[in-house]
Image (cartoon, rainbow, N blue to C red; front, side, top):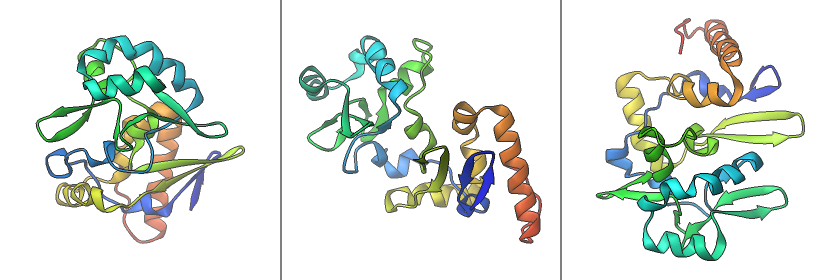
Length: 197
């Protein structure tokens, strides 16, 4: 791992290539797993606030869950996630044919809200883990994202570059510039060239 300020970053981000391929994975990350999307505490009131703007895109079964349980749940002390339908789809999933998409993201793209989607979703397949004052960024390699790895390799898109927008959203432009520079320096040290994200 290497450090950029107080953030520890997995070396996997040095050479991983990635680009989401929804046509192949069908948005599986929104419907598979043992809980909904991890949420930060400051996102909880935001989800409640934007619900009226996204409600029209949500499925009836999702609206039933929201009516009963709300849009988020506490999964452990001070840990939160979106609620799910039958332990599968996040309540904010909407379908475009067979493809699961995020209703929040769709409404934001239409200019109706400013919030793009939970930061854990925006950063995926990077996972953030907190250890007091230290955060770690780890690349979660799972089978459902194999199409994204193949697409990134075919197009030559580094994972770190693919996630520039959410990394900048979370840590700021100055941090991302230092992150990009650190990656270039580590690649040079490791003999991988100095190509930038």
